Amino acid sequence: MWMNPGQPVDAYYEVRPEYTDDIPKTRFKIKAGKTLSVRKWKAAFSFEGYLDIGPTLSRIRRAGIHPSIRGEVWEFLLGCFSPKSTFEEREQLRQQRRVQYARWKEECRQMDSHVGSGAIITAPIISDDGEPIKDPLVLMQAVPSANLFDNGEASDGSGDESQMHITDKKIIQWKLTLHQIGLDVLRTDRTLVFYEKQNNLAKLWDVLAVYAWIDKDVGYCQGMSDLCSPMIMLLQDEADAFWCFERLMRRLRGNFKCTEKSVGVENQLQSLASITQLLDPKLHQHLEKLGGGDYIFAFRMFMVLFRREFSFCDSLYLWEMMWALEYDPGIFLVYEEQLLSDERSVGSREKIKSIRQFGKYERENLRNGANGSQPSLPISVFLVASVLKEKSNKLLQEAKGLDDIVKILNDITGNLDAKKACSGALKLHKKYLRKAKKAYL
Image (tube, rainbow, N blue to C red; front, side):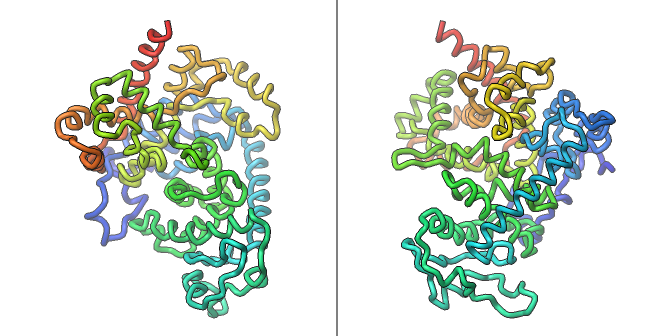
């Protein structure tokens, strides 16, 4: 079951030979007796299937999850399932969700026959006013995977729906995003052998296309493919991957929600500015002087959760540590709000007997009086703050303008340790809570 102690796990996420010298080296290693193993994971469940989540969270925080069980553990961390559910209840819910996803996917396929066909659209197939684009060159570009069709004939996208003028603005908006999803899918994790297979690319495209349709307020935005890609790799069933991504987007969709006046991620950038101003006023003043007081240079870290700063494997390790630290055992009921009233969701949190069922970061929030009336800051804000703290001296001494700030922060790629970054975030979080409390007294 175990690889040699301390051996990296790159074999689980094979890199294409031509890219091996161009990507960050993986630091995460499976540590016998520390990393959450298959044996420890199975032992955490009772006979009926109830999960003792507390010790599991501690083990994940210390040494991560074995790659062979990562997908199923993530389903709990992200709130797909409740630790208080049984094996039978989870299987019933899984089947219900698969049926629901199939319905949504069929609804999308009725609007555009590329969905579920194995094709990936990479060029516009509709105009802003709902007219189908019939240019042969555009249609050829819109179906780069035409060779996948069983009859060997290229599809020209000329199904009935592609010849119709569309007046529904929501459908027009959705169809306008399909080619952007395709372009992003072809760029996402292209260094991995997994995405050499067209059917894996098509899965990623289908999941993102369906999500863009059901979440009409946000739709699809660049960066979502980076967040969804690991789900496609870790969960074999496309529907299961979709629901895991959907749960992740419950946490992050605010970052992608834009208005004419603001971008969603601005809230986290403002929080980062406040934290830095409180904990490192000298650095904050310096960044403001250089025109970086809006902290827009940290935009990418928030949008794709450090996917660019770490190797693929290390970014997954970072994510699971973050989610284990932030874990709230009431998250499942919160996300199933259509089944339960707000009152019952709140009540469920009160019934949790032990604070040890919460992640360490969330426990600290609870000890400092968090009561749910105001959402606590996500740990990602303190992760970025810890990166700035680590580079504080360099930024103060060498940064003479915004370009220098960006260059210094870009240099961290491949040079960050995920576990140290999380430890640094926890320390800053504790310090911030202490100072913020004094400031309000």
